[in-house]
Image (tube, rainbow, N blue to C red; front, side, top):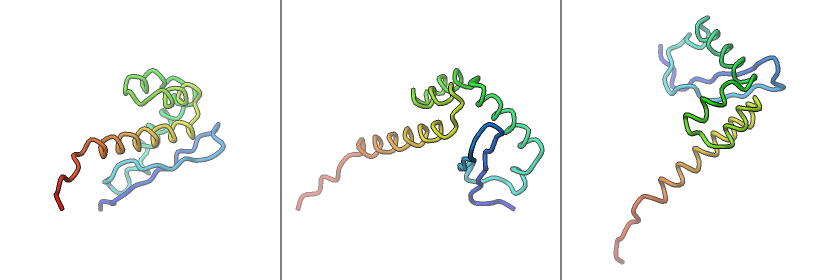
Length: 104
């Protein structure tokens, strides 16, 4: 069975809270609970906390705020930076759309 939205709680030992974020719009039921997914999440968590993902974040051009947060291992600041970048991208796309030139 497929779920419409899946959420993952990303909680790690050194984080004081868990951040919840959308993973994929369509994820097969049971994927998130699978040992393979849990292992991948654990490895990501370790790499993020240690700041090892900052060079990768730079390569993906996710913005200076995201790079700074990844360097510090600050998941809360990282997710805020990603959300801010996405909102700016949507706003730019909206601004780039041609206006309706209808005459009254």
